[in-house]
Image (cartoon, rainbow, N blue to C red; front, side, top):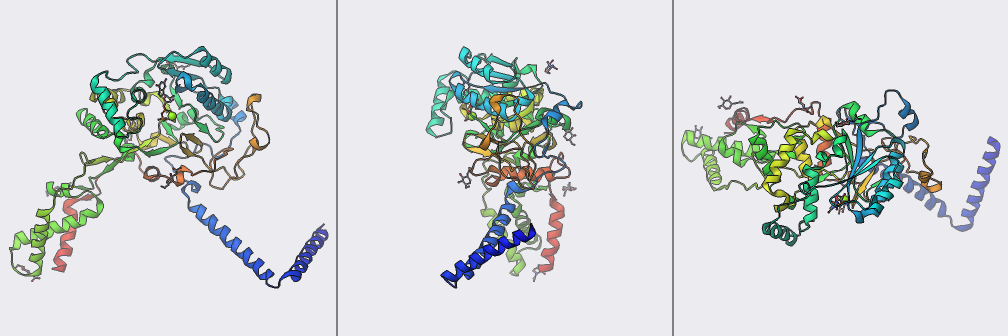
Length: 513
Ligand SMILES: Nc1nc2c(ncn2[C@@H]2O[C@H](COP(=O)(O)OP(=O)(O)O)[C@@H](O)[C@H]2O)c(=O)[nH]1
Ligand SMILES: *[C@@H]1O[C@H](CO)[C@@H](O)[C@H](O)[C@H]1NC(C)=O
Ligand SMILES: *[C@@H]1O[C@H](CO)[C@@H](O)[C@H](O)[C@H]1NC(C)=O
Ligand SMILES: *[C@@H]1O[C@H](CO)[C@@H](O)[C@H](O)[C@H]1NC(C)=O
Ligand SMILES: *[C@@H]1O[C@H](CO)[C@@H](O)[C@H](O)[C@H]1NC(C)=O
Ligand SMILES: *[C@@H]1O[C@H](CO)[C@@H](O)[C@H](O)[C@H]1NC(C)=O
Ligand SMILES: [Mg+2]
C-alpha cells in the first residue's frame, strides 16, 4: 500500500515538474511563494479570529454554560434526577401576526420543544380567532391556552395630553414613540404579564415573539438547569437602550429606591456608572470630579491652593502656582453632567427582553410590583416611551445579584436585525433525532457549522452576518468583567479615600517645592 502511494505521489510530482519545465522556469518560485503566502495568511487569519470575543471562553465560577455542545436528550430525560419544571412559554401576539407566530413555533419546536413539551400561553388584547387557535394547536407538541388582556392591563391614560405627547414623540423621531399600542405593550410587559391568571399557573416562563429565529438545538432543559444552579433570570442579548426613549426613567428609579430605602442587589453594578470613586470628598471636589482621570489633578490643585492660603502670596514659584490654580478654579463651572443623579448614571444597558427565561417571582414580588406602580403613576409609559426591557433590567437589579443571572450564550437567537449565534463545539456533535416527521432533517438540513475548541453551541447553523459578540457594545464587556469578579455579589465601594489620597499627593508636592 505504502509503495503504491509513493508511486502515485512520484508520478504526480513528475507530472507537475514536467508541466513546469514545459512552461516557465519562474513558475516553481511563484508556486512556492504562493504556498508560503497562503500559509502565513491562514495562520494570521486564525490568529485574528482567535482574538474575536465570540471565540473566547468566558466561563467563570459565577456563570458558565450549562452543557457545552450537544448532550444526549433521550438519556437526559430518563435520568431519575431530572425533573420537568412548572414552566410555560408565553407570547403576546395579534391575530394578524399568525404567520410569524407559526414561524416562531416551528423554530422552537424543532430546536427544543419536540423533546420537552412545555405548554404555551398566548395573550392578546383582543380575542384570538378560531383560525389562530387551530393553527397553533396543530403545530405544537403540547397544551396551549389563550388569554385576553383586560382594560386595566392594556391602557394608557386617555386624554388630550396623552395624544399630544405621543405625537410629539413621533415628531422627534423616537422609535415607536408615536405608536400608542407600542406604549401599551411596553407597559403591559413591564408590570402586568406576570400577574395574568394564565401565567400565574406556572413558576417559570420563556418569552417568545413572532418571527424570532433559533439557530441551534437546545438539547437540555433550561428551566431545570436554572433551578438546579439557583439562577433566576436568563438572557441572550444585552445592549444599550436608545437614550431618547427614557429621559427620566433612571431618575424615577432612584427616587423609588430612596423613598423606599431599597438595598439594591449587585446586579445594579451592571447598569450603573458610579461616579463615587472617592469617599469623603469636599463638596466642591465632589462636583468637579466625575471621571477617574480628574481625581489626581483636582486634588493636586487643591493642595496648591491650600499652600497659597497657608503661606500667603509672595513671588516664588510655588505660591504663584497656587495663585494660578486658584484663579483657574474660580473660573471653572461645575460640569454639566445631565445624566448624573446621586453620583450615579444609567449606562443604558439592558437585557433584551424579547427573549427571557426566568422565574415569575423575579417580577411577582412586592419590591418590583411597587416599583412598577411608582413608574406607572409617574406617567413615563406615555409621556416618554419607556421600554419594558430597561424597566425589567433596572427593576431586577433592585432585588437580584449578578450570580442570579445566566447568559444563555449557547442559544443562537435572532430578533429583527440583531442576532447572536455561538460557535459549535469541535467534534461535539451528536446525531439529531426527530420525534415527529415534520422535524426530520435531510441532506443539507442535517449539516451544521464547523466547530471550534472553545465553542458552546449544539448543531448551530449561523447566518453569514455580523455576530453580536464581536460587534458589540460596552454592555457585554461589563457583564464579562462582573462575572470574573471573585466576589460578584458585593456592591461596589469607593476605591479611594480623600484624606489618604491627599496626604500621599502632598508628600510629592512638598518634595517638588
Ligand atoms: N396583541 C397585541 N400584541 C402586540 C401589540 N403590539 C405589540 N404586540 C406584541 O408585543 C411584542 C413586541 O412587539 P414588537 O412589535 O415585536 O416590538 P419590538 O420587538 O420591540 O419591535 C410582540 O410579541 C408583538 O406581537 C398589540 O397591539 N396587540
Ligand atoms: C405551578 O406553580 C404555580 C404557581 O406557583 C402553582 O400555583 C401550581 O400549583 C404549580 N403547579 C404544579 C403542577 O406544581
Ligand atoms: C473623613 O474625613 C474626616 C475629617 O477629615 C475624618 O475624620 C474621617 O476619618 C474621614 N472618613 C473616612 C472614612 O476616612
Ligand atoms: C516660597 O515661599 C514660602 C513662604 O515664604 C517658603 O516657605 C518656601 O520655602 C518658598 N519656596 C521656594 C521654592 O522658594
Ligand atoms: C457592527 O458594527 C458596525 C460599526 O459599529 C455597525 O455599522 C454595524 O451596523 C454593526 N452590525 C450589526 C449587525 O450590528
Ligand atoms: C445578594 O448577595 C448579598 C451579599 O452576598 C446577600 O446578602 C443577598 O442575600 C443576596 N441576594 C439574593 C437575592 O440572593
Ligand atoms: Mg418583536
